[in-house]
Image 1 (tube, rainbow, N blue to C red):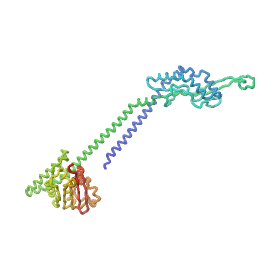
Image 2: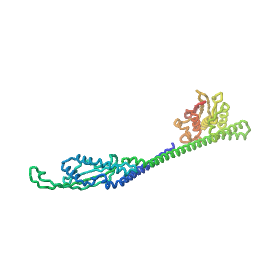
Image 3: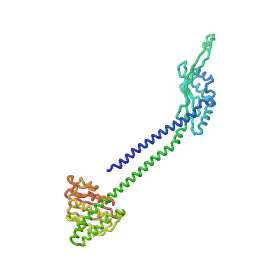
Image 4: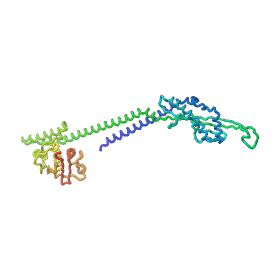
Length: 448
């Protein structure tokens, strides 16, 4: 089996896989770069948010001492974390509406859906050395959008608070009202994040042209390879057909040339009408052999073929095989419809092959059995070993003895017979024994 087409396909698949990998690599990189570019664009537009936020949040800078008092109360366990969360929620509704309008106005021209959120991440008490929060508290957010959070700003501020208390407040049993100052210190951490809700749609729309172009390029490469490979196979098939035709012609021309050569020698000895007839038939046969080269449809043409035709063929073959005898055992009384060139090719190749391998007696029988045309050739030649029978129809195969070819030839005769039989959807069977001869039976559909 010729492995070259498989190598071509595997090589292309390897290179195509590498190309697909490169396309995917560039696509992933483009996706990451475009995502980074979009995020940076949003971050730049939001850079003034901290400066402009006082437009919609008067308490942003925590000038109101109620915030730090709230933290002090939380530190003293006078209130819980939920109370602090409600305190911020009560103030965030109004701020969030204003913030949403502000953020939407920044990205209206770009079509980005951006949400901004500011959170308290920790309130660390310096006096008790502990974090007062178990979970982040939302200070405000422009809209409740979900997606990948991106950091805008973050920081930690130190806050302090002092208050005075009387001893009476601290110890009810005593009347002494001496004043005492209590100080509180807090490290407050906050972060501001933003989310681009329609980020993936933006990336898809931005990269759609690149993805489609890459896909079309890959499809085009596959199509070009398909067309190229198809043309390669077509050309290869044409070359094989040409080689087969040359092999057929070169093989088939040997018999008529040999016959004409012998007839010419006989003409030199004596003039005979039979010799002229032989020359005419062989010249006609050569013309028939050459016709398929110029007119391919000739191989399907059928004509009447009768007893005289088969006798002429056997007579011509007998002329070249002076040491052998050809016997016609049976032939239909009425003419049959066959392609003369191909039909005679089958018979002449089988008979000459028999003589080539030592036969002295060859018998031919042509009969109709169950609407099938049967052609049987039996010889008394040297026979074929059972191990070699599966290979005798292969191109250039020649039967050998002791690894030595004892006969001349190219090993094309039986291969040509097999191809002609296959062309007409026929069947060929062989029986042979060493030193007992061979029997070839060809069954051809008739009238179809």
